[in-house]
Length: 487
Image 1: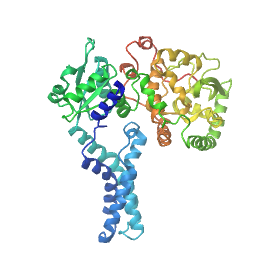
Image 2: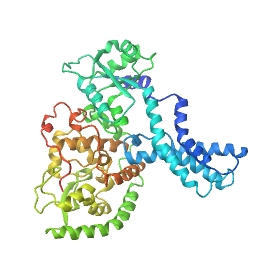
Image 3: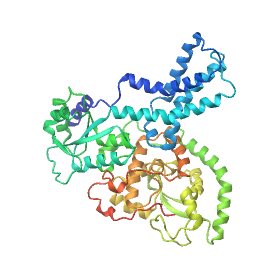
Image 4: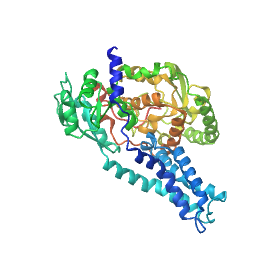
């Protein structure tokens, strides 16, 4: 057995997956939403009571609703609109199950003025009571984390947990490793050295060890196997933790080995089944709605003089060039460079079009042509791509898929344009490359509706968090922050 096989075997032995609550808590969490909806529906039911013979049918309906709703998906914590809809799904399914049984005569029916109360009450419980209960459980079951890695990695993790709205995790400290030369001032305290891992985990009540890419992997696995297997502690890669908890890839924490899943036999190198069909359906439907809007905006833009449409070469799938179409939002002849938040080149109607992203409507034509997808990373200009590929690790990997009208990066961190902003978006584009699915595409489309009326907000300012780039990112630190990509 070589080192890689030994490492994999040891990892399988010590990595028990994501930290989960006890089985009865997980089961209760799955049933809580549908059960709440059912109780609300029954509370407003007319009649003298529930027939005994219908109890088993009600239970089956609730279980079915729980299976459909399932455990709250990861994206529900990260996307405000679709997260709220996901949390409302359980109570609504439970209430619907009772309503169906009542319609079939198996349960007392609701009066005509009561059905709407069920819907409102179920949604209120989902959006108010359930989150409060979840926070209470997380506070009682805080996951105590220790990072096996450098000062930079541990401080970055602790900083983002504080800046973001993720709860339930506490970075207790870091553990140094053989060859660790970190001597900078640390925000996260040093707990000890790797050789004392078991004693440290027990003394500080550590429940999760996060291993960065810096320490020798076999040294970590051997120490865990020697001193931690009897403890209630779990081990996982820091990069995987970032993906699961924050919904992005910590580019500074990965290397080429992260892309091994792309060459796995089960990975689909081509477009997802149904992805092109989804593109055509959404593009055609959006095109019918957009046509009169485009005509109206064209008349307004024309009054300012100059052309209505803006054409520009962008880089698409496989590095191929194509021409993108947008409604013109800048003065005629504006220079090609990053656009700032209060850019004087942007026209009055252009500011509205940019804020609402309605200037992107002509790109529906690019989707119909097959040059773009509805969901994917935003395409960039060739001159920007050439430069960004030199300073942002793995930037060119985003060209493994078609660019999109909207995407995971757009709904999570907006259309910010700068070198730092581009690096920030790559963190999300790589996450989408690995986790994309038709379901995730639908979720992103749903969240895009919110971005049309509200700017995406992320509470962690990327320039202050080191997961984006390695310490040698000084070339980007001087880049101006911006709020829009140039038209």
